[in-house]
Length: 136
Image (cartoon, rainbow, N blue to C red; front, top):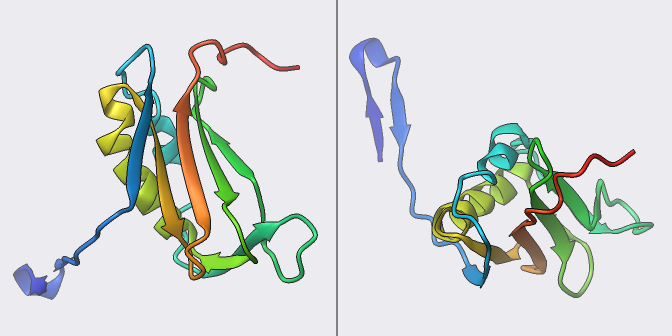
């Protein structure tokens, strides 16, 4: 559905989105400290190859780690099985938004799975209250 606003300057596109999300281990806090990852991560819609280090044509080597500002929350993008896969940063961001909304915000670690063209990319979002220690 597309709706044009006043003078045709506003568009709204609505599509269905059914993320594959699994919530796991309870954490000690239900604060939104994982949101910082979503606010700062890349969101390009360009399709890129994702896979294990040294794999031909891979642009983003896995595992790939994203952290919030104080390193108390980590999102790890990893390959579950099989060959490299194709997806965009935007699709990974979409799934992390779902994990944050369905799991992290309620004090649970979470995982989005079956991402990418090969459906073999997994994203884990975990809290670690002891991880806010500076690494030198």
